[in-house]
Structure formats: structure tokens, C-alpha cells
Length: 140
Image 1 (cartoon, rainbow, N blue to C red):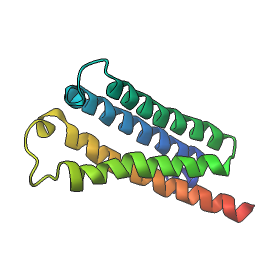
Image 2 (cartoon, helix red, strand yellow):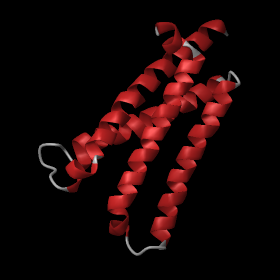
Image 3 (cartoon, rainbow, N blue to C red):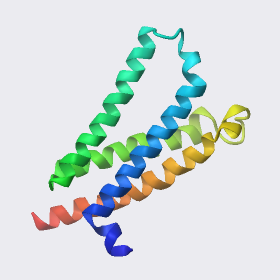
């Protein structure tokens, strides 16, 4: 298990899982909070969709580059995991909806399960990617 975690295959697999948890959380947010962004089909909604599609596309690009032994791809995967998984999870816990004061739909909708999944898989992916970046630096 340790060898898999330290391998490029393991780091990229964890990065894929972290991307999927980000997308799952994004779909859940979209379900419950899209009506708060204004009317359907508004410019703000289109900008949000394009923004998150560019994040997901950038992460996929970074993983494809990392498969071809690109150090930049690994660094981009690390930045996406830190920003989109860990950043969103910590922002949810500390800024947007702290567990002590946030009651209502998030507890019934599974929001906290997705937030914990983002935290766990984002952290695992970040650690594995950091190990890969350190290995690539040592070999070059």
C-alpha cells in the first residue's frame, strides 16, 4: 500500500478521486444554491458555469500532463487539490457554514459527507503529489 501511495499511479488515482469529490460537491451546491444566484440563464450563472468548467478542465489537463512525467502537471494537480478540495472544505467549515451555527438543508442533503470527502481525499492527494514532486526534483 505504501508503494502504491508513493507511486505516480497512486498519486494520480488520488487526484482523480479528489476531482470527483470536488465535482460531486459542486453538483450538490448547484442543486441547492443555484436559485440564489438569480434567474436561470443569467449572465452570472453562465460565468459561474464557465469558471468551474475551466477548473475541472484544468485539473484534467494537469493529470494528463503528469501522466507524461511532467513536473508542471504534478504541481498544477497539487494546486488544484489544495485550492478546490482543501480550500473549499476549510472555507465551508470556517467561513460559509460553520457546524456550530449552520443548521438546515446541509445536514439533510449530505453536504457534510461531501465536505469531509473533499477534506480526506484532497489531503491524501496533496500528500501523494508532494511526494511525487519531491521525487521528481531529486531525480532531475
